[in-house]
Image 1 (cartoon, rainbow, N blue to C red):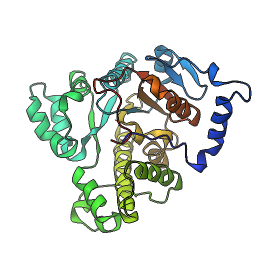
Image 2: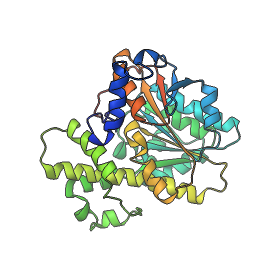
Image 3: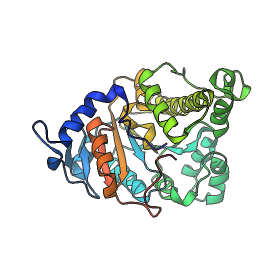
Image 4: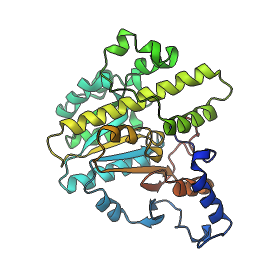
Length: 320
């Protein structure tokens, strides 16, 4: 899921008023004083200042979970993730890698891929159930997955099986829970009543799918809950089962799953409030995104904003 800046949400109005004030030069600073926005800029959101890659790597040194939010099919975002994994390895932190593009029902294949260097790409695709779950072009994500194999990093599928998500989107959560297909998977308790999450996600669903019946919006929203809760379940299980705190998890998903620390990170914190987490929001930079990026910076979309080159497909659609 790509994020849509929730600038229209009333709950974020104080931040928006700050942004408007900055835009027209009211107060102690103006937009003229913002850090340079260009490819390679890394912004620490709390201070709204640019930092070096080495400073970012230092900040990540003690993290238990590092959430990376990408724009799908952007090579520079895979490169950024590999840079972070390299840094952790060089610090002897032995990271694990979890991907939205991989699903629970393919986990046995992921385990075999990491331990068997002779496993062919076709065998990996079949055993990971790539086509059934993600379905996009594998070469777009192959470098990151191959990196995990080369360096023997634990590789985890974050996403619930597509069939499970589709079941909720079709029948709604109440009816889907009665299905044997739903009951065959272990999910933690579904937190449905979260007004912050609901406001954020409903705004984006309506923007991406205008003029649908209310009950359809509700089912799509409930499917989003299952995806985010499912990803959080994988991360919680990893934290509970890891042999040592020196094994951090790098979670790689679309930016929409980490925005404002709400969709997945907040669900993990519900049961693991004391873990050290960092969120990194990757943006394929184009000058046309300036206002959007500045709004996200002032609204606190993540701990870090990292501007990278556009991918070969150019600007990505807002809804994907």
